[in-house]
Image 1 (tube, rainbow, N blue to C red):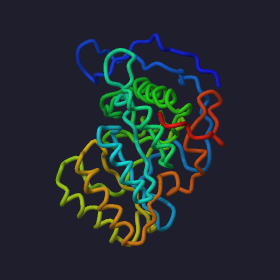
Image 2 (image 1 turned 135 degrees about the horizontal axis):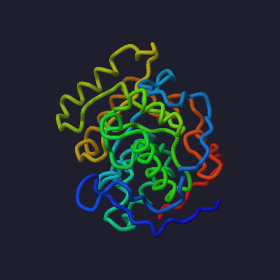
Image 3 (image 1 turned 60 degrees about the horizontal axis):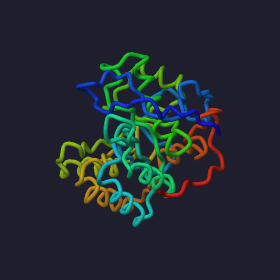
Image 4 (image 1 turned 180 degrees about the vertical axis):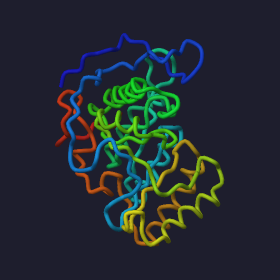
Length: 281
């Protein structure tokens, strides 16, 4: 697999502020011209909020990786649970020149090696409806693709828009880029720090007979950038999901989408088949 290198391209990580004009890109293979064939039967460019496989519950985590993510991976491994991580790609870097955090590749590879699904959460976490035009939305996604592909050798076909904001124009752009637009139907608002409320919201959904599709299955959201989400709320969710008889799976599995369709080859645009796990650095 050839990888034209862009390592001489400077990178800006501040979302706003000095010397940050939004025109700088991460180093790596430029995926902007990668073909985008539609893989599998899950719709592209259409936001979905619910799982479709009976008895499943998808735990998902937005905004990482963070200092708490390795602990979260330990907890998930100890409980034999697979989750989906929606990666905020500029968190993979730590300064204004081409310098990726030394820990980031190992964390991302560990997620993949341990069976978790890796998905996109844009480059800089801007509102895709109100803060970005069509070209800027595309750039946000391609930057994230370049960053993840530089670590893994492929990039996701699943994404979640920041703030769950992705109206018709945004969804059309995501469809052209070959993305499944992921939302959720459990909203614990763990980011607000009220974990009593978060637990009540989570339990309330588990006790609801079916989702909006008439299926007993749920798609959650949490944030591995919050210490109490990792150390406390995650174990609560796992314990309660099991007590209520749910199987915790990735988003792809809760949609019955084969794993090979979760990622795209940067050259061919096709599904990633039989790719051996990378060694954790």
